[in-house]
Length: 580
Image (cartoon, rainbow, N blue to C red; front, top):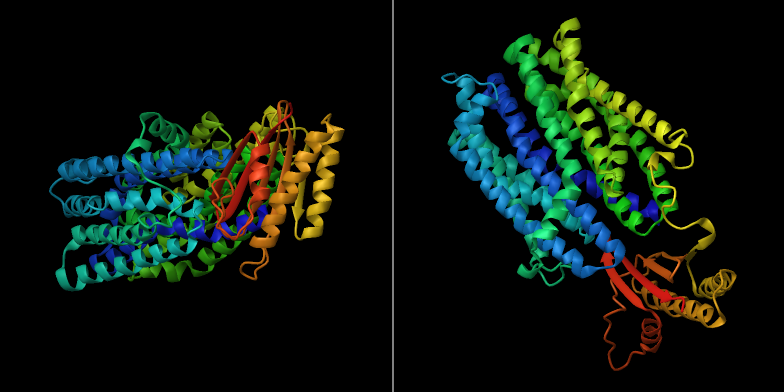
């Protein structure tokens, strides 16, 4: 089932990663084509400030994935709703505050970014900051609602929202340059309006009765807000590191190659950010699924997940890298139409950039898995080293040796050296090669349950239900359970699994999957049922007059605790049976 989940989530996660970079990519193309190279340079100078709102949004989104995947793993819908309510409230407050501050101090920020007052570069940088900042609430919404749409299984709606954002951004950009002639302010405003268009599309689900999350003012708590921020800090570190890196490289390029080199770097970053949707998407899958598997104490599941993500990292990295390598001249000409030094620098830089995609994907999958498993200090160190220290240091050193060309090595060297450092750290701490026995997971030795205390099974039809229930009863007896407890466990499996097979597997004519996981804990037995059928909550099920829910009621009466959640298009039911 993990393989199926990864395939289902990856395409949607990759697409959702484009929600911010796509508008910026379109803006960059329009700016280059209609406003010139100096305008692209101004856009590049404004980027670190624009990344600030992205950093906060990414921090919140990562916190949501960690906190809500934990509550879903525990089967607590109420706690998940509290995370939803708190995330929306804090996102609104922060994004509106950012918008006001950026508008009031746009001239100050333009100067800090490196533009000299009184120049056209300064005016264009200031104007773009003003236009884009008006969309801060919309861009924050795009980041914060994505993980909730993923957890609710609304991949189709996510695609519609992204397409809406893309089409409206292109339309508003064209209106700005061809009709209103609003310059850089108009370009920033076009992006702002496109984010709001995507937010409106998303609202159709979140305001509907079908939404699996419930917003309430009572759910907004200071404790939950702190939990979201604490869990998302590593992602915030990553975005902050990117801000520092871009700011530093902008300064290096201004001194080494002037505005032409800065324009080339801006174009490389715009295309690179879009290409990095694969690494961001892989990281998103890692963060969400790792959080659920970690809180289910599923070591084998985490091992399989990481193996799959590393494999997809290589496949997607090779494909995207080949696209950038082969089509670099075509892509660069979309931004810089005139042949010359700027175009040549950008083509070379983009081709060098492509080499860093595979290690970047692997780094993202590892980082987000460490974040989901609570290794926050390790993540913060990796984020600063990968995002700021190593690439900025590489750019500084190699710019002294080979000039502007040396700066283009910053991304590849930063990613490959970070991956080497992670491998050396794992080897030092675990006394094992990273790829052996799941050492790269960096889990505690006592994590989860021992293999002898775990029984897992996949069920496809009714005869297998009987086989698994008998096997579970024997498993219970072998671990000291009495006949009564063994019969209870067998009955739980027979009733709940047969209900899924009989009603869930036949409802739409599609092939479905049911997995069962049984854990022998010190004080109780845990039974987890997971299927990909239509949503059905047996815990709060109220039968109609013609239905027989005796089996469900009997199972719930035997369980000391029963929790149900519906996430990632999966029904998740957890039962705890006391040993005494």
